[in-house]
Length: 401
Ligand SMILES: *Cc1c(COP(=O)(O)O)cnc(C)c1O
Image 1 (tube, rainbow, N blue to C red):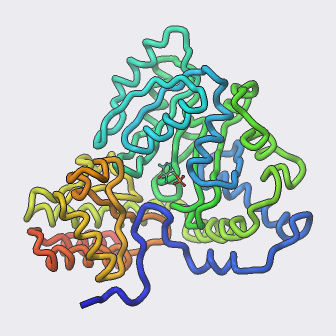
Image 2: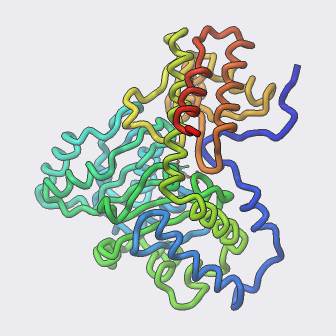
Image 3: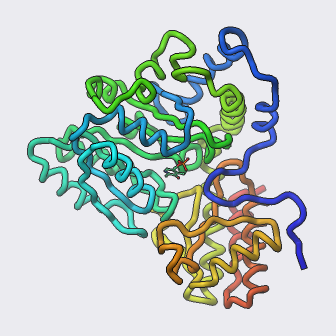
């Protein structure tokens, strides 16, 4: 029996669901890139892009994905041989460090494993051990999409300030921007890395780097820069083409414009609150399922340190893979693979999955995905408790009347 026909739901942590409004905004003839409507639209895009990251400083847009935003951030932050301290809480923190290392940056890696946030004492010790202040920047993920660990960015800033270390603070918000509360300026962040296809609800293709004036001045001499990665003209250019180092990503920009309009209509704080409630429903479902089978558990035990846009969990191998296959092919819901928890060749790999609740998602989508998961547990005869009642209760109580 196949119940998958109907509108499919891609509940993987990026690309996220693209609103019809965003797709329709992109469905148009190519605009003149030299003058007219596109230029006028982009004028209004800059303030909204700054606002979504909580900064009044600079923003540079690259034609690329999150990896290219990492590369651009690295190229602007560092000269060959500079040192970076990387605080890793999952595959994406490690990935950012690998990209920086490959570019010639010396990496000090503090790896906090796959289920714990940054340990502030270890972070402080690493900064104190750097007597000569050789560490130019600290790189960290806000939400590591592989582990779904969410770090407390203001607490990291406080450690830098307490120790009195001048390193710049660079934060990967690809998975968390416009999902989890984030305030770049208020939290003392120097560089924020994002991409179009997660909380920003736009197709993959734009990498975005926000940077403080402090970072601009401190990094003015960085020699890893190339004309394509240099953030100066991208952010501050006086000619339109300089913002893109060539042809503008025209259709992506129209899509992003619509997405930012939608975020503005809802209100950024309401967007964060919606993600908070949907995430709580997902967590409640897992707790309920796990009550009937201890092999089913969330990856991150303390809710404070859980991302609000994605949830990593275990089901016991090989149940996670079987469940993913069932929900996708029998019921139209595609869940995320476990990432970085075990190698795809290891049997343990089949015990992990992720549920995204990122961007253009609402109560019925999240409850639908969870209910389909529970139906899959029934179909596959995987022991479980009732997760749905708890998830329904969370949403019902949060939404009120
Ligand atoms: C998705 C993601 C990336 C990589 O983005 P791509 O667009 O896949 O290159 C980097 N960091 C985090 C935290 C992500 O979620």
